[in-house]
Image (tube, rainbow, N blue to C red; front, side):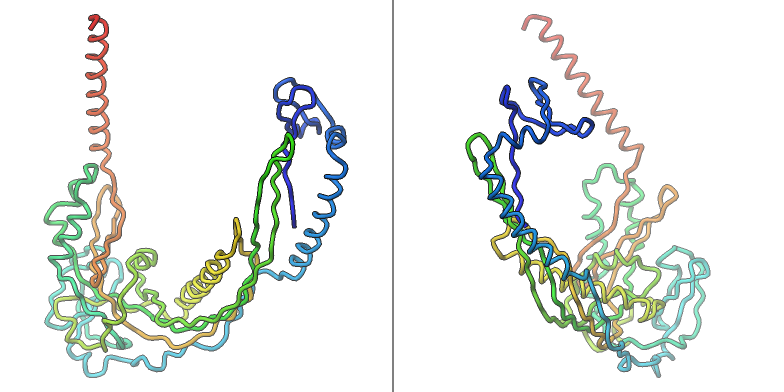
Length: 389
């Protein structure tokens, strides 16, 4: 579809005209003259209008055909998730493992029997009850911690450094020392996406024609097809961990993933998976479908277009294998001003995420100090001017 915009000028004074919706007429911004749309239209070249009308009809017919054939976004899902390779239980390893259950938040933490856990890493409750591990699927893979606790503590201090409005509670040694290394359970989804994508590309050009600036826009139907396979789309399987926080810690380097062994656990805790594969399925599907859409969109943008907008797709999403892995995370929960603040660090890459609060007392103190200093400076400037230099 082609469209053009003409900057109409007042026949009386040459000022710009605007359409007044209340009166249904064109008004001049300068001399306040009023014209009907028909009066203004008759002042422009009939030849120009006829050519534009023909061009509009041609492109509008094409655009209408595109819209009529467009059925919106369609996603079909096929297959079933295959989790047959995940061990049903810990086997002989369960004899050396302990499941600590928090009576406050309900969290369950796994650890070797020799690891002493004295408080819940999520809510800080000091009473957690150990019990025999049972009824748990055994992880297939693990990415070992690459950074030790000292590195995590240093990363957190650096994260808080020079933030003068941060409450002191967050930077004290007693708080920093509560950083704990925990292996978080993740489902890793394999899948395949194939799709046909439609985009609307536009090319706009502007040029002067006599007294007017004319903008013409041409629109094109763009189509892309692709097939892409995904390996190991991660979704955390712990209700204790916010999904957005865990997503922010990505990516992990899967090349350092190992076959699971309890020998990687000493000194660390491990969270229990309590989010099922079925519950995580939509997250994995949505991430794969969105990624494929972005690939097609970026490819469509390589053309000579001013803008490229998606307006339809037909996508097939095929489920594949699911794997169970433990990924390394340092976490710190800080209670302040009636709220809980959770921080996390990727134990492999060192990426740190979390929101830091602002101490109102420090903010108003700083504001008062700056205001006072500016008042003093302003006072001396005024006195200097009044003294006649």
